Every structure is written in C-alpha cells, then in structure tokens.
Amino acid sequence: MMTRYALIGAAGYIAPRHLKAIRDTGGNLAVAHDINDSVGVMDSFFPDAAFFTEFERFDAHVDALRRAGHGVDYVGICSPNYLHKAHMSFALRSGADAICEKPLVLEVGDLDDLAALENDTGRRINSILQLRLHPAIIALRDRIANGPKDKVYDVDLGYFTSRGAWYHASWKGFEQKSGGIATNIGVHFYDMLSFVFGPIRENIVHHRGPDAAAGYLEFAQARVRWVLSINRDHLPAHTPEGQTTHRSITVEGDEIEFSGGFTDLHTASYQNVLDGNGYGLDVVRPSIEVVSHIRTAPVEPGRGEQHPDIGKVLG
Image (cartoon, rainbow, N blue to C red; front, side):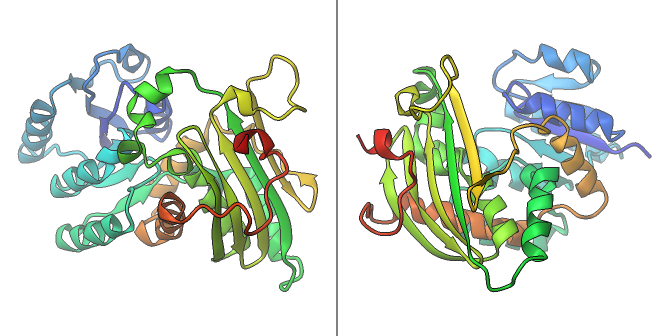
C-alpha cells in the first residue's frame, strides 16, 4: 500500500525537497498546510493534494481521513523552528509518525516532553539530519574510525552565508523563534561533528550576536574552531571576488568537500525512515544540548583557540 503523507510548511524554502522525497520514495501527499498560499510548486509533485492555509481546517481534514480509514502515515514538518514541537505533537496525536526538519526543538526539555508523547501514542519522531548521509561525511567518519583511537584532530569550520535585511525581519531573525544563528544555521554542523568525532567534551563561546556566532568545541577526537555568519561584511578576505558565501571544513589542514551532493539527501533521509533507520530523539539530543549552551553560556573570547577567520566578526 502506498505510504500517505501530510506536509506542514508547504510554502517554505525547504519544502520542495520534502515534496521530491515523498514522490521519489513512492509516497503520496494527501494534504498540505501553510499560512502562505504560494505553493504552486506542489503542481510539479502532487497537484491533487488538498491544501489549507488555516491550521484548523487542515487538522479537521487529517482527522476526517483517519476516521474514514485513509489516515496519513507520516507528517513532514518544515515549518519555522519554534513551531516544530507543536507540529510534531499534532502528528503523533493524529496517529502518524513525524519527519521533522532541524533543529527538532529549541530547548532540551522539549525532547523529554516529546519522548513522553511517543510513549503515550506509540508513534515515532524522526529528524532530518542529512549530513549524516552525505558521502563525504561518511567517508570522513570511516577515516576517523579506522585511524588511531587516541588521536585528537584539529578541525576548522567556517560557514559564511550572506543574507539580506529580510532575514532579520523574518522569524529567523528572532531568537525566540529561530534559536539564533548557531541554532538555525549551525545545528546540523554540530550534529555532524559529533557523528564523526564522538561525544562533546567542552563548549566555549567566543562571540554571539544577531548576525554571527563563534566558539571552540572539543569532542572525543577533535578540537574544533568554528565561526558562522550571515553578514556579507564578515566574508574572509580570501573569498573570491563576487562570491557571497564561503564554506570550509578542514581536518588537519585538509579541506573536506561537502558543499555538493545535497540535492537528494532529503530523499535518502525519507528512505532511511521508511527502512526503519530514522534518527530519533536520542540521536538529536547532543546537538540540541550544544546549541542551548551556546545560546546561554558566557561569552569568553579569551578561552580556547579562535577560528582564523573570526577577525571581522569580532570587529
């Protein structure tokens, strides 16, 4: 029987990857919701799917499908970060499993609430952690796993992705809604680092602002200097002329090329869930602990090593 889906956040930036993943894994989108109605992209994937801008009508439709014996199996969630917990709760209470974008939640305590709800409903929450499925990251993890067990690697993570003034006016610009730069942009990198280098040992914050964050992390097998920014004025001097982004991960000075290969990782993530190998709450917890600490810890630029491209960020 064809797997049936609902999708929350159908007008969002990442929604087309969810639509493609549903189609390419042989599923069918029964119904979608977004408060915005710019969802013409659905015509390329599921033109017959019901669509609602009011959550109450969407809820009623999902419930009617369930009562008629045609309930959805999964609810894909790509809504704003601060709504993830509520939308995952809706999915589980509707008798479906959830497939949710990162960050799964903003606060560590929310994971405990969701775990209790999983227990009550018998349903499951799955997080999109696509970097764990990236061939270059898997190769790196294998390299570290097959290397000396006592070696601690020097890692630099620099991610500069310019955003315009709109960013600060959107939900992404409000920390209580997005979790801030480190949460909204950095969370999947922190998860990837723990996936490759093991449990975190230390977390020092060098800078925390509305447009950038930086710090130092120690994992079981890595010392990581990191910096994130959405401010084009922070682009490193060595960024090629006309380029508005600069992404770099180096391990012992060797560049890890991970910018390519993103197109089908959501499809791989959905297939992973269908195969029973989705990333659940326990897998997500370490990265949520990292970003929660970054959001509240004292800023200590004098502790730990700083990323070499932090100069413009610190001013």
